[in-house]
Amino acid sequence: MAAPVRTLCCSVFRLSTRQISTTCGVQGGQKWRLEHGLARSGTEYGPLTDLPDWSFADGRPAPPLKGHLRRKQERETLARRIVMLNSEVDQGMEMWREKQEEAKRVEEHKKSLLLKPKGKLLLKKKSKS
Image (cartoon, rainbow, N blue to C red; front, side):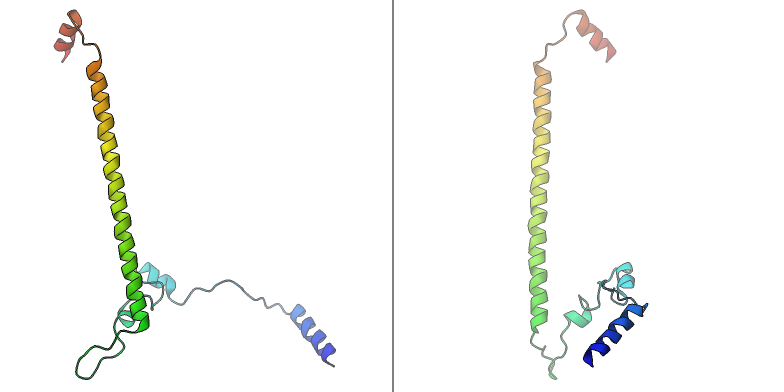
């Protein structure tokens, strides 16, 4: 009896026009938040994520939660990486400037070694400038 039910079920699926989507759906409001310069989801950063959930009645702050400590560590690591990469870019720019200046000095030195105009050519050059 199980076989006919199975066959019936499979034939119903074949006749059905309903299709199943396997793509990843966009979270509700994600497009709006990105357009307004906010995080993709409401739980990435902000007061609901960054501030403690509770505090003691006498005003002492609550101990930090694991997620808060993890996010703080991730942000600190990212900040250190940004500073390191920024310093590398600065060093690269400085080396490039030095190479440009050296090339300019070499070019000027080559020009200074060229033969100088003499006689009538010198007089023509002075009268033009």
